[in-house]
Length: 488
Image (cartoon, rainbow, N blue to C red; front, side):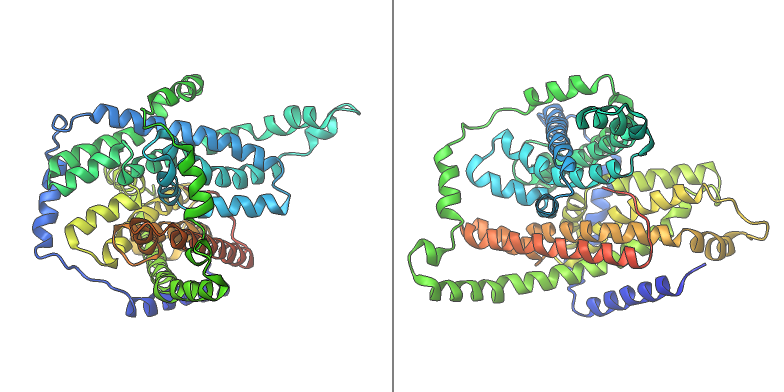
């Protein structure tokens, strides 16, 4: 049954979301949204797979960036996990994973340009922080008994390789393969900043109103994600990882002088760079906080809290679609298809599509965040509901749903929801690049105006905000005794 703390926490977050709605910009501003939505769906059901030149190359490079970035991130993350008990390592890992891949890409574009290294590092760096956290948790849960059975005098390295790693290897492999799916989504959206992945062609098709081309790209992306278990086999992984860097394409040569100038001049606050003194630095920082940082933080938090509650609502409505306790095989198959599409489409792509159809406001962002994250949580708790053995008096329909299943999966539901809270905030910030006035909007504006010093301060604020939400989420989960598993 529901515990009093979970009920109180639920009502608190719902109340916060309702208050946030009063301060939000929720509207449909396009002249004829239903016509545009109809044209989009017509394009999806009449895809044109032959109109986009270089489509095969875009798919290949999407896969190549994902494999290279995730492989590099997993290796670095594993090394960090070995020393994760050090506070400095935990803080470093939390910081690098708090900055979204697109923000990393925007930073590296300033000195690497459209070089493959930009995309690889944009994925590898935040994934290193994620892998470090998850791998360390997995290693900490290793069974201590095998280590006790080793002979006296066994070295620490041998003990680690022969006693700890084999015990947790299956979990490490499962999570890494799962993270590869996330890497595919990250790789796709890098196209929105100019890298030659699927997102680049998708943005081009939408901007030109070529919905059949866009539909073909989306379908191919869903097929790519859905078939990962078929073509990503353990024996082939070394081939993929070794071969992927050769399919990243070529960029202009890196000018290392630009790299040095970026770190020694471009990101240095302009009052210091121009020798204007600390007084002017205070004025510069105050202006940045009042005109950009605080409005960005406010809109980011407002949008995050609304999206969080709608994510939870959608997840609770969606999990019966794949639960064996409701409907027949046909309904569950259609439910699986809906949830696969919802969770496979990155929030950024969903928000971009909806912004083209509905016009600029917070509504497309809320719907995109709720669909993607609600699809993930709905899938997870739907699978969990299939393991529940119903009582004899469970009833049917709404009675079974409201009195039997929801109370029994509610703790897990809250755990997944609070785990994704920080992830939703990361995505909320980055959606500002599309025009929603979150922190990403001001970061992108500063970069467009070649004010990298202001952009870096705003990125640091974004990271601190994400770290704060992550810490608050862990505190709430601990207070409510919620157990979670990592989700992308």
